[in-house]
Image 1 (cartoon, one colour):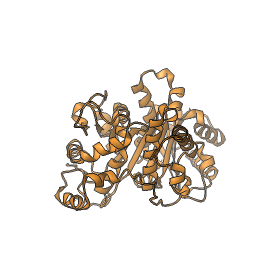
Image 2 (cartoon, helix red, strand yellow; image 1 turned 90 degrees about the vertical axis):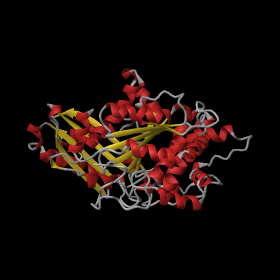
Image 3 (cartoon, helix red, strand yellow; image 1 turned 60 degrees about the vertical axis):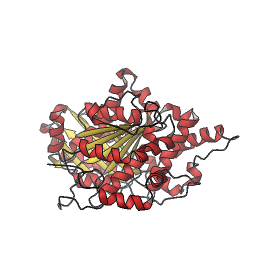
Image 4 (cartoon, helix red, strand yellow; image 1 turned 45 degrees about the vertical axis):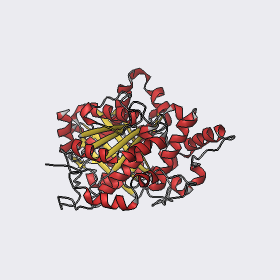
Length: 439
């Protein structure tokens, strides 16, 4: 683990992760196993769930009536428990993240369809964003679509609630959406859930490892941030090919990695999703052995230009050709695509489950496709908050902290807490994040 942390600092990008609920916590534990994160934390509403995160990194928003009961697959209840315990969450996160980089990006993870993680993750993201208002750094989300979401009413409702809030409130810089059905179909041979989860994180780890590395052309940290700040959804595809290829073969290998059977994302092929109507980003990272990296410079440059043209010349595009001697006689190619629309077809499936199950009963779940500006789904440079037929997850915070109390509470937080909203950062250095960090 120590080696991986040093490696992350060497390349200029460190990542801190927070898992929400049982599914999100175990995802974060898997990413930590492969050395992706500098620091991790996990938040849940019950001790009954098995979480792989060390006890010292666990935080609980208990149901005081029954500490082992949790949210019971009710996202609204999960959100309410988080709001009621928000002081505890803030204090514990400040302790857990008290050491480490001030420049870290953050990634929050959960399983859509559940109650605890799904109910709290967007509220947590909003709180983190407010904490970094004076000195913002990336807040990313990685969320999975469990199989239950497409066959069971409560899970479908919970997933819709989370997607509704995350899209209309624009709280993540980018959101990775992973399809569990595709994961299990693609990775049955890896056996344990922990090993499968590690594979989900692998392309993201390689992307973070390569960014800012010494190379003939470098995608630096600022470029990386700019790509992800395009918003909406993001994907990172990866493939490894023989070094004995020309531009055409390399381009075809990259495009094959986008095909539905070759990745875990909910989205379709990015070539069909790109549009001049919205802002999107593209990054190409190519790792190669040191004896090839300079000799193949023209091959990599031409491949980058070719892919950029296929994607209709995205507004933001950066490249990195990085020395990686672990590859020996191969190339590792990582494609980053951001600013993608929300997965409309999958959302329609979720809506279908909810509508089919509630024809004869009263239900207050927002209809995602009707209750939101469709341009938020298909892409606009900016998103606007929309009405949700009386539903707003973020109103839970107001329930617990009335406006006057919230204003007073903000004044009480110091920079030793995770959510110091009003104090200036300790370090005036541009681009540095002081988030409960100490050197």
